[in-house]
Image (cartoon, rainbow, N blue to C red; front, side):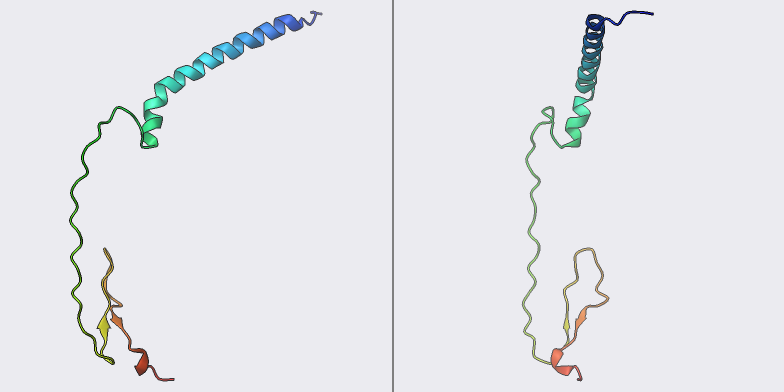
Length: 93
C-alpha cells in the first residue's frame, strides 16, 4: 500500500488551483466585452448626442355641459372601443 503524503497532496492542490485560476481569468478576459454589453456598459462606444424629441401636441380644452357624453382620450397605441364616459347623474338606482 502507498503511504499518504500530505505535502504532495497540498502541492498537487496548489497546482490545480493555479491552473484553474488562470483558465478562469482567460475566460473572463475573453467574455468581458459580451458581459459589459449585456449591462449596457462598455468603454468602446462613443457618446452621441440624444435625438431631439418633439413634445406631444396639447389636447384642446372643450367645454362640457353636464349630461352630455364625453369621449375619453385614446390611449397611445390602443383602441377607443370604450371611449364614451357615462354621466353618473343618468344612472338609474
